[in-house]
Length: 299
Image (tube, rainbow, N blue to C red):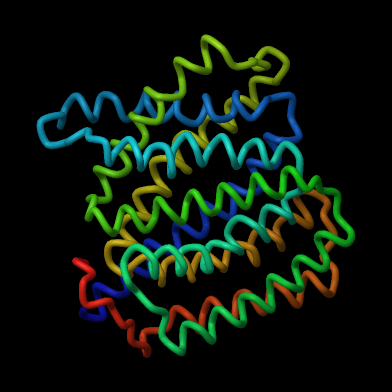
């Protein structure tokens, strides 16, 4: 792989990190609003479908909706959305930063090992050790001082696992970035919106127009379409394990931004954790490593 191709992969990963850092803050704002998790999920995929449907109608002959796309929609689409927004209704942004992007490198590495036969190199193990130390510092600060609910923490952790499964399956099945974005967005809307309209509780009327607009724009456009495209392109170039490692930068960014924007304290434990997570992510994402593949792995 040439240097220009690698730089492009890191560029897409950096844009994904930026959008997902904002995702934690915006999702927590939605959690503190009158909107339910069901409402935010509906805004996410309803808005995305309005944009993606005309695109699909234009390129429909090239897109294959199959059982694999349904599985991707359940893991990385509506299933992930319901879990993460329900979690942010109950727990803080600091907890979310620890358990969502913070745990992602471990969960992606585990799933890549089980599904793809990819074993982390010694250098990446070193990076994961640094991330683990940083997560321990973040957890010490977050679970010792900030407001959170263990049920929300479990939901956030489950959403991180769901996204890790999605990430590895996309690589395993060699789904093109745009096809993953288009297919997952539309299939998620088709699966979720009828259930939401007919059976799930609504509270849109209690929220302000600005709150609804922010959630619809960020969750439905930036999170589903823009970030998904960047993420899929980064995975296609760099591989799921390396991209998962880079996602560990998100706690540092989101944790720092949460202090002025959400009023969360920036304690010494939190600062130490942010530094360790960032350093671990940098070490684990360097190119001077090897990845041993299982001989029977088709990828």
